[in-house]
Image (spheres, rainbow, N blue to C red):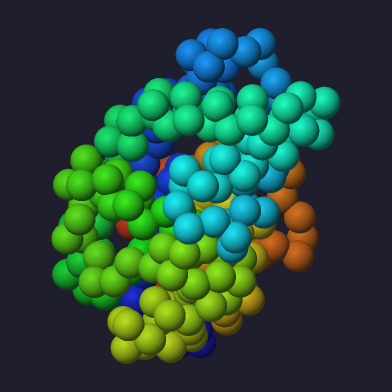
Length: 235
């Protein structure tokens, strides 16, 4: 029989909340604001984002590094990328986020029986703005901003730091996230069970056998259906 759970940890972006404007839309506006035709495709930013978490001290510095290199890779001047990064920061409102379905009720339901934590890849100032906008600043006993406080997910370090703060162990905790590569794989590396809430049907089709969540849910609102004591394989 699986060990009982006493702590539930969450990812933030695309697990608990979502920007009202996609990064692609903000990037398009940033190119226009900076006076450039598109220098690179939005998917290039998504693909390279995590590469700069360990080497940047803020989200602004991360974008500068990333956009400068993407511009250079595409044959443009690095300063063009820096200018687009500055325009992106002006366009992006970190408080313009909405909770995903069921989030407030789920957290309220769980807080009576479990200690709650947050483990998110992202600049602390940026992520705290989102939490404030969502009125979730006090929802978690601990928050680890991976890539800044610790190594970024999927490294096990941020999970281990959160578990220590919650005074529990990996076999007594579950992590909930939307990403197989950072959330499920990271929780697995830390020895935790995981609940996967894919952001889109495409994510399900792209899943791989070695990234095995304990459960897969269609929506976070369905978390009430999880029997922590009897499910040890994904559906």
